[in-house]
Length: 547
Image (cartoon, rainbow, N blue to C red; front, top):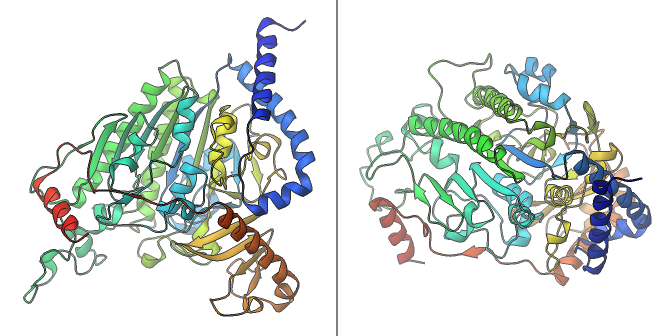
């Protein structure tokens, strides 16, 4: 005889299945539908088994769905963390991330977007960022950001009773609707901009010969006319609660931002991550917490390096590894580790523009940040879920960062909350996590640079799209197993695969035609911040004067 609890769990499962059948299907890209036509029956049968497994996992935790802790690291290429061997090669150590990698699954073929803002948009919305109007990384005032019409994973989980918190880099725009506490997070501490403003646009970075021409002390400025050419008066770090107004912290009117203040910001976010984790774990509801550190991006040398490498990025990656160890220890202390999905990954490849002096270098894959090459969009990714994901496992299946949106929603029992009025690129990869390698539901990725589709990945093959006006036959095709650096296109690949790649592009374009991209959010910069400094008010007024 089943217990009353088991019976109730089965009834909930049946009710959920019935509800799901009444809902329209999620709109996926044409390439996924092409795969589904081949494997749909098999996947549907597997999904029934997966749903039963999820119900068993929740039942074992008293009916409580799992928490989520998502740590996203900036600008670190594949192979640069999580591997003791590579620690010796590169001269900096990541022992905490290495240990973490052995406790769950290593996603060995995780694809991101080529730069930080688009990757974060893809994770938050489950959509290629171009579909949301997000095309590039911005530094100063733009009056743009993630639109209120976009639905984030935090908003979806809020509907299922989750408490939500965001700490660290955000970089989704400088308009009020784009702030995290207006995009599904109960509480958020974040900088309005990113590390170019916070660490690179400083006198310290100029002295390190990394930022040229910005700081006034670096040149006489004898013939300077325009006093507004160089960014000024930018808001730094703010904090806000859902439904409230944000407030800038730790910055006085007329004060110059410095490397010391950047370092204190990093320390503050680490403290707040620990505090938030403790507070969330003490509540009765499940939680979703994002910690997106600013380190390792940093452009000045410390008084004393901690790593053998000593580069200004590599050294801070070793520091960050220690901080991640503290966060994981805090999770253990709360008693919630056994019911928390923890993921650690990077958002895109290294900032190759500072290769060498930064201490980070192109390793297996060529390229880095902003590029469609494998080195720009392949990153380390590790996920742990005790009792559900097999420890020490690895998967060579293709995964895209947008898949996290759909997968987290499925694990939380929130699939019904996923919008049905727009394309969702994220594929539910719950089967891969629970059943292991070989269970991914994608074998393809479309790789954009800004609004331009630059390459298409299918299985082990990758086509760099031909330039406009050139025939498709001119597009080079690579085998990324045999040629991971994408240096030797062979006609033997393109002759047979060219037509198939072009069909993939046509299916993708057909989906876009049926479901056009949504516009980027537009507005007045810095609205919704209650204590703007006079210089921030001025830069906003000047910006508005010519818009």
